[in-house]
Image (tube, rainbow, N blue to C red; front, side, top):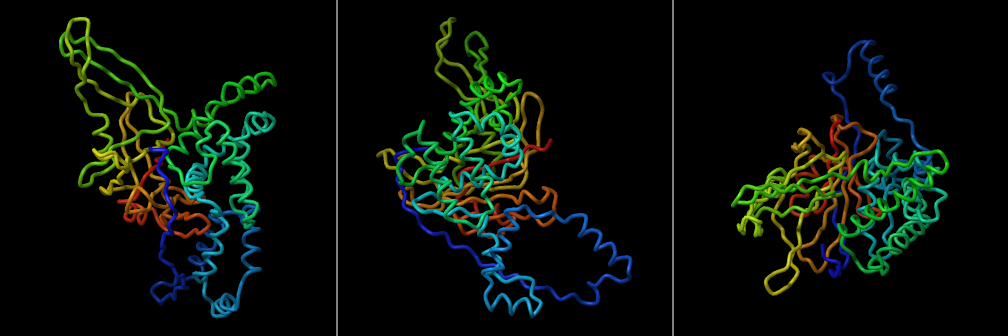
Amino acid sequence: MFSDRQTALRGVHHKTFVFVSSVATSEDKPSGSKKKAKKRWWRRKNKVAPSPEEEECSKEEKRREGPEDQKAKMMGAKSVSTRQTRRYKCRGFPNPAQFCYMNSCLQSLLTLEDFVGAFRSQEQVWSSDPEAALIRAFMDIRESHLSPDAHRKIRLLVAFKEAVSVWAPEFQDFDQKDAHEFLTSVLDQMRSLCPQLQAAAASEGRIYSCPVEDHLVFKMQKTKTCKGCGAVSITEEEFTNLSLDLIPGGGTVEEMLRCYLKETELDYNCECGATTSCQRLSFVNLPKVLMLHLKRFRFTPSFQLQKVHDPVDLFGDLVVSSNQGGGCLSLVSTISHVSYTAECGHYICDGVDVNVAQEDPTDRWFTYNDEEVTETTGKAVCDERKNVSYILFYKRHD
């Protein structure tokens, strides 16, 4: 994307969801002690123990309960919208100075539980390396993700931004930036630390494996065939994400991928004297997480930056072929740019609840609009982000 795009923040309006306790009819009520016991057993079996951060957030929520919350409890209501918003607010990140692009990128990365876990399991390697400040700043944010302390989060966000800016000075100021450029820079910097961290680990009899390479990097094969003599040239290149052109009038992600991979004709000077060749792209392998960037910004013939509003039909699953076989991936997070023009806008993130299995019927997701966090579903995200989705994260089924 374009680093010279300066955008002003605009708020995003969210629907307020009011949760009320349901009243069971005689048809809904389970009959007999066996059904009651089974229900109690299911709840015990599927209950997830709260983390220390969640317990702290819950305590903070109780301290802030007002008369309406206490009245709702007395009346038997499970929750009200204000309490639900406060409880989820612990998951959000403050936005003191046009941080929405960074906040959205961080929320999406934190949704990738295995990716984050790969860093955590190798803490002994990167924690003492002076050059690994970026990784330490990222993991500090992860450890405080559910904390209600907004001031601490601001300090950690500023520290992370400063760590990124050491090697990417274009992110030093407090202007709005492009989320795709920022995220690509973060991943490239994390990956660039791999050789020295591997050397440091080897000196201590350990092994360091780069989480970016293990989870996000994949190879693309480029095959060129001369139209004159049929000579074939094959090259491979590594990527952390693909940038896809939108289909005029709308289309699906699978259709956009097919357009990206389709055979094209190129000017190519071959030794046989021919001047054209055909080029075909293919996945050599599929990553554990496939990141797709949707090209919603383009320059007009008069070099004016323009936003593209063509809808993208999003679905929960995506089937992709590679030279090593096909694979099925599930959508786990999105970053959206909410604006009618390229000159202004606001970034938000949607991410699956990592504590709920992918096949869980509740389909529980969260919408992260800086410090405002609301509950949603994957279906709602697919329906509501057609015209604003900007970066998509698909997790491969193993």
